[in-house]
Length: 355
Image (tube, rainbow, N blue to C red; front, side, top):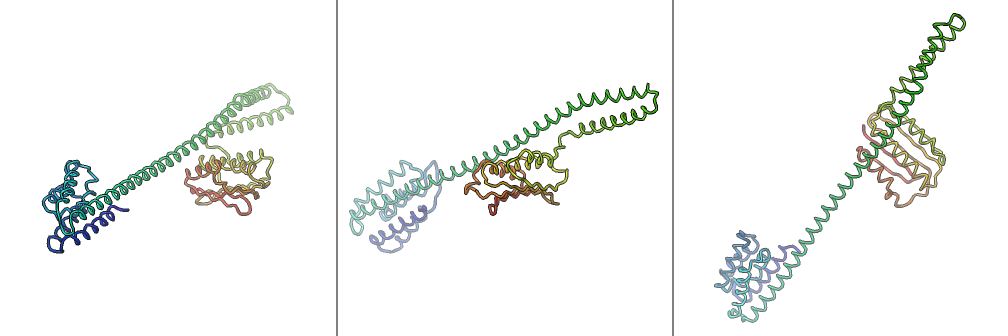
């Protein structure tokens, strides 16, 4: 119930009682208009006192007809609970006992008490409703804030996970490069030097031809190793090879892999696709009764596309509640992509990420 509706209800009751007590004349209209303006306008507050209501209460001490609308003023008194203003309100009510307008003071007093009690109850109900509404809004705001905070934390966790994968890959790559450089590279260098020394002291023309061929082969191998070590840098993750390694290590599924992408793929998209493919294979192995899977990676002029599909039919109704799919959603949202899941004729995950 709104405050306006409550005030209107009490105001109409006061008007009806006013009609039964006093005749409709100029003073009747003036009293009604003054009460309407005072009680429906918030007025001017000074030190927690509503000035128009305060003046109205004083006026009611001297003009009996103004006391008809005293129950309506409790709306404004309810906001401040000023002791002096409330005292004036009850003084005006008590003085009404000694007045004898129309049908007698007893009926007037009963009606005043009834309207006052009704007005007080409605005030309390509306105030409680407003407090509950404020609490509900606060809970809703807190819930939204917590939701945004959790989304931000999930985003940070995903970024940290990608960084950890990236650092582990980089560390392993550097270790391989160092091993190649320190071991194979040194042995090849030594072999090249020994071959050159043999060429210098060799006098046999037949052996010289073979030594030249061996020297050229060792130089070519050394050049290839230098290029391989040089290529082991940050952005050189071969997405196709990594996915092929994942598929090769999966023995419980028959996986058909279709790859049609260029080499210039952003690092975060590479790691995103690798993690999602791992999650898709893991989910099929654990939760599906399918034995075949199709993985499609394709690059279009405006976006990258990933499709993971299996032939499983044992699909749980609440599959969207899994942590794995939640992580996939978070990864795609972090990259501004779109994810669509279909469950007809198998389980399908369709992902597009704009360039």
